Length: 348
Ligand SMILES: NC(=O)c1ccc[n+]([C@@H]2O[C@H](COP(=O)([O-])OP(=O)(O)OC[C@H]3O[C@@H](n4cnc5c(N)ncnc54)[C@H](O)[C@@H]3O)[C@@H](O)[C@H]2O)c1
Ligand SMILES: CC(C)[C@H](C(=O)O)[C@@H](O)C(=O)O
Ligand SMILES: [Mg+2]
View 1 (tube, rainbow, N blue to C red):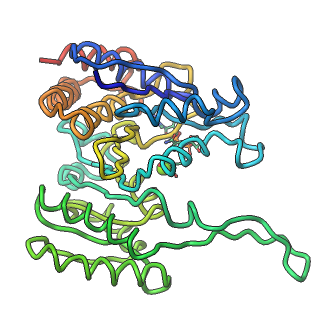
View 2: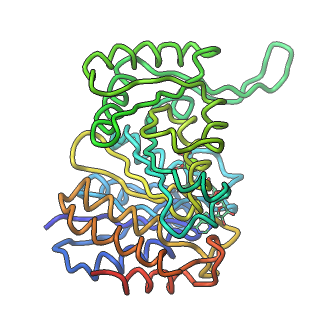
């Protein structure tokens, strides 16, 4: 029976993951679950944000359902002990280089979007974010210059194989959709981006059926709020993808609505909302669990070959939203648990 690692983490992570778990349980699937400590919770209990037992569980599991990590109490710790190192460590250890972040407007959420309804309605895209390279994993530190000044540095780097494999994920994803791939970079300034653009163009020779275009990241950030309907699949690096996906989430109504899948080319994956631990609302039952619930659906589709069960979850979330279920981020008053109930009530 497939094993699911549940790593709920910090802040609203456990609150939203509990709702995803309730939905999974209701589907009556043959899955086993094992919970592990991660993030600030793990640091406080075991002295490390990614304890060996958790890493072992993640390696053994067929898929990982991840909540969120991050705890203001831990922000002053040496970097290796900070909660965020757990998620970065898992991505790197498991080779989860391909991060799919679908952003679409659920019918009924037009008024929750930061955009005008007629613009928001057109949003239906997938951001394919590279997840194990870029400034995230380059050489970094704070050093002292010859003049005695403190100097922070984070190296941006990608080699051509890293670019080519994420480009292929972008092209393959575009093939299953409208056949349009936009590569977002900063090739007018950055050498890393110039190589990115060159390699994406080389790989495009294998995908003559996909229309490839390119855009600088600053323009892409602007176009995302001007005319998001122009985007089908966006492929981009780790940092640009992080920023653009938070921006896309608000265009689609709320950061509480966007799920993600982190994949490594096998069936294994880690599934998580794109949002963080939201310390400002943690423990208040205000968090929107939809992103976590939709992440569970992505898990069923990408890791467990259960597309019908995934569809059932997505249809239930869409129906709950259409029926007016709204947490505070969407302008409503439902609690996290109530929103979970609304999704369960619409499971058919
Ligand atoms: N994948 C992750 O685990 C992840 C992702 C992003 C940030 N973080 C961490 O989370 C902590 C907080 O970061 P932040 O405040 O920059 O980002 P955040 O995503 O946690 O919160 C940003 C804003 O969005 C709101 N929000 C987020 N999720 C929501 C939800 N499901 N429902 C309703 N509102 C929601 C929050 O209340 C907050 O106002 C930091 O420690 C950060 O490093 C973790
Ligand atoms: C918590 C942080 C390391 C993480 C990232 O930057 O990748 C988060 O913002 C995300 O989007 O998953
Ligand atoms: Mg982020």
